[in-house]
Image 1 (spheres, each protein chain N blue to C red):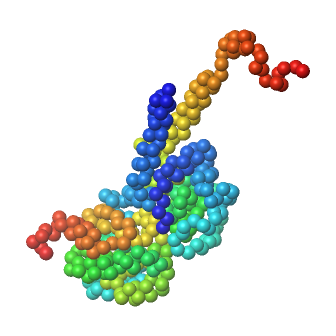
Image 2 (image 1 turned 180 degrees about the vertical axis):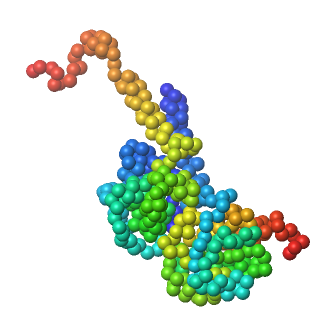
Image 3 (image 1 turned 90 degrees about the vertical axis):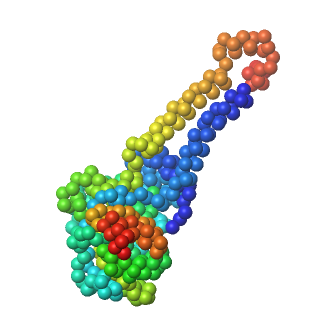
Length: 186
Length: 192
């Protein structure tokens, strides 16, 4: 596998991007440098995969069910990928997990119950969008903090660089000679 | 002025550096399993390779139910013929399975995303396997255990709860230590 020691840092940036972009899927893809234009459901096959990739044909297409499978799969992390959702991953395990999502929904489980099943098996890690509790709260607080902090810095700098009107006029009057060339009429 | 500027820069940079440094101490590949402490997921799988240690043998085709194994320590090892670390741990697993054959310990290999033919060939190539191998079509049992790669091994205690999970190739030392601690309460040292 790929030793990603900087993944914590990229993870934070990625989740920040996920918060900025409204959908979890768009956020996860925005965080992946090699796939800037991959907006569709088909992810590039450059992802690390285990085993063979086989396209499983969907039998008995129920569009309402499929839409729910898609929306829930998009919120769950593919365990063998880097920052891809089950919905976006072509890997065999992700396909099988989508199958589990579909089966459980067909058995009458709600979206949340299906999510709870995967959390019970893989932990909160399986959620692409972390819960706003504990250490993960930072992921939601920091971007807001940076925006407020950045605005404060801009405000302070703008105040420091601009000169009050009265002072500016007072400065200009005694020394009108060093005016820019464009300002002096020929 | 310079001191003030330096203080502001330090105040901004230090928390970020601290956060990133904390990130460096964590392994993103190390995903803690929520299973230990909880009842083991149900296992109802068919045997496809019987095993060669007389006590452990299960005829091919017979179903294996974890729920039927009360008061037994169960080692559930997810493996595949395409998995390199599985080759590394196989001798250790086999040796320990044979050594603990007369103890209340059962070993099962669960095939993960592989064909039975490949797995049978692999077992032959590895010089046999004392414990039975089970087929897991569609990786449903693997997903039920929260498996995200192979090899992953789950130790189920005598109470039917998952005691621990081990990711990566097992060694004889790890196996011995885990099994001895799981067998200890009901089988004190005098019983050995």
